[in-house]
Length: 284
Image: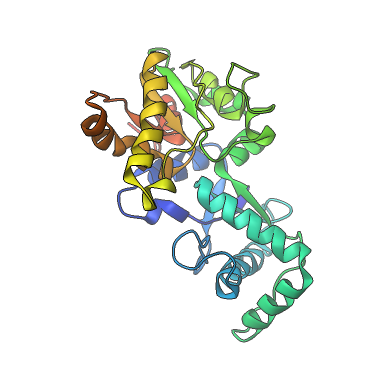
């Protein structure tokens, strides 16, 4: 199955090398993430999403995805733009929804694209999806379990969703007490890991707050790290490169401010999948 791929925040400085695992895991599961020519980006960096040029960037991304995938027989139907970043997913999906529901906005963006020889695709003809959704819905926890050659039974993993919250991801309303397992929990369990409940799994990682106040950002990160430590987590699994950076590299700032000694590894969830697969083209 082929999908248009927008790497989003993986290409920002400090994101590490996790994108290689994203592509390798997808390939192992029979999912082809085909990078879109001249990806438009989500508008998180630079232009605000209420600016026509920013919506035009999203419109161009959807247009190029439709054009690039339309000739492929094994393309997801409808064609999908997949991103591994929660921020990019939220911004892209909101912008796409606005283009579908606001005729005036759509007309203005269509004019912008027409000037470059592009035609905006029909409303709803291209989906925006997060990588977690694709691995869970299109591959499935069962297929992931079958690929495991090195179970992660030695790890207590705390799943962290951050901004990617809501019923679609957590299989129920947000709550501070343990609830039904969500999509990330099911995938981690399929890897053989011991999944520990993280009460703050849907709380902000401090990424947006950091632009306004480092103190607020480190306070948010401290609460999440403290919660993970209290649960005895060996590692925190994220579904966003931004959360990975903020909770990973942010530990030094938290330790300085709060005189703590947190040293909890933070991994993007496909890194753990790659570890458990331990096969050729994934990870040795």
